[in-house]
Amino acid sequence: MAQDNKNGQLMEEFTDRELEDILRTGHEFRKLMSYYRCAMMEVETKFRVLSENMSYEYDRNPIESIKTRLKKPESILEKMKRRNVPFDPQALTENIFDIAGVRVICSYQKDVYMLEEYLLRQDDVVLVDRKDYIESPKESGYRSLHLIVSVPIFLAGETKMMNVEIQFRTIAMDFWASLEHTVNYKKDYNPSEELLDSLRQCAEDISDIDNKMQRIHDRVIKEE
Ligand code: GTP
Ligand code: MG
Image (cartoon, rainbow, N blue to C red; front, side):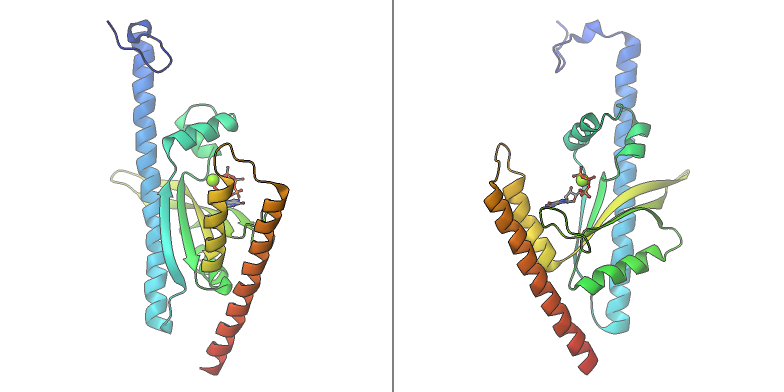
């Protein structure tokens, strides 16, 4: 007997044409994921190069750490459903911009904007979207600078432009976001208004400390 697929439909109930379509789409999605992985590597390398260069030129490194992640297939499907994006590789690239993600954790707030400037100055980087949640924090208290950039990946036979989401934040903003995430993204848990207020207050307190640390750093640089 033919094997059931997830929806309970028997394999033999698909026409050859339908099976071919399923396989082709699966192949196209895997290829697309591989392109996104390449784009993520390109962007990560750009930051590693900037970091190396700044360590050499100025004897300091504005980047604490760089993290990369490729969105999981389940999360991609969930977002496509939520946003009514048709199940098609082209529609996916045109509508979902955070498949490849790079998070750059900086020491100080000024480093965030400096790195943004150095990145956007590069001739092969195209800015697609920019959301400054440092200047205008989200309702939750979340702070970070988000960019969507389009960068070329140089493949064996062609060059492709791919979107990458970059999140810049300071160590302090990352500290808050990581802990808040564990509270707010728990399944079946609805935090009370009071708890959300406390989290917002924590974000404010952390931001005050971030500003103080920035001022200390500015003084040290002046006095050097
Ligand atoms: P998504 O569908 O979540 O991608 O939303 P969006 O496309 O409107 O993007 P948005 O600018 O809201 O930021 C998306 C990403 O920023 C999320 O996937 C998180 O990584 C991060 N983020 C945004 N808001 C919060 C927040 O309140 N708390 C935490 N911890 N992270 C957040
Ligand atoms: Mg996202």
